[in-house]
Length: 387
Image (cartoon, rainbow, N blue to C red; front, side, top):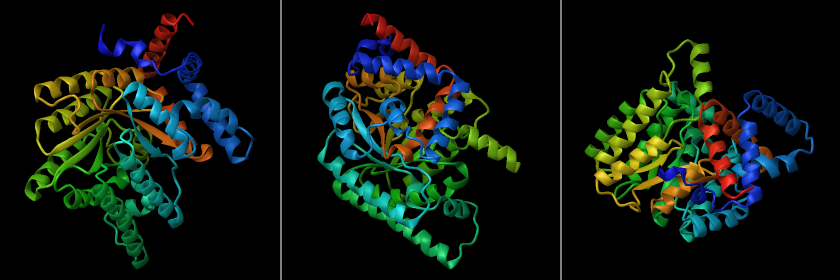
């Protein structure tokens, strides 16, 4: 029996009713037209303030999210850590708020989470999105090399100050920071800022982590260039490596604006690119890797690479990460073998977290094989429990 086929370990924390709900949900997600219709109906219902939050909360939200506030998430965090040896990364998943007041609010939220991390061994990282700290359009303008107005320069200085504030506190409290990647047309300015932060705060080890989306065919070159800079300037590289979450959006925009798509030509090319990145990182010192993956082959490969390079299962420079509500067969079986594993645990008001949830559902329908694998494992476990 291969490691990830062990459903008893994979679903050990799920009650019978939670197992049944998961089975029902993935059955629904498998139906692509239903996901599209469901997403549209949900968006409409929330816009016109129909009383659907209770229904959302008891189904999709509770399966993929930890709660409305950080405190809501604590029972789940404690349960996963105590009974499954799986850690949590608290992800405040509110998207698309474009005012200064919400950027300052997001900053306060992350600072509070860093304090949580310092207190709780079960929360090893803090995480945020660049667009949580500044206006998306501003990142785009800087990425395109356009000249900023004096107001925009001041606005950008405030964005940079928020990043520094978080990094200063993270360094002081020794809490590593994962900074998520977003759409390619804003990423250049985020990358440049994060490089400066690495240079400043990653002198002794990786505190600041950028994110590489390996469905972009240019990311391997970017990693190698960054490595050369790091060697010259003497800083550590922290990277979360993922496949990516905005594929349809990226392709549509490239077609609409008439530039070559930044996305790999097919799934195989993305997988190869992903595996090349983790291989490169494992081969070089002064690098810390957070491997965000729901792919079994990549996970097996990373275990082999760790063995090959004499990296212990619990070495803090290597973490595996999956999303809460997905790929428990990877998370819990890896943790059972003593590897460092963290679940991304999204939280926030139901209404505000919906864009995130809809993206998750659509992503699951577009990744062929992902949902049917989840369903087969749930089926196996239901049979084992004689449900």
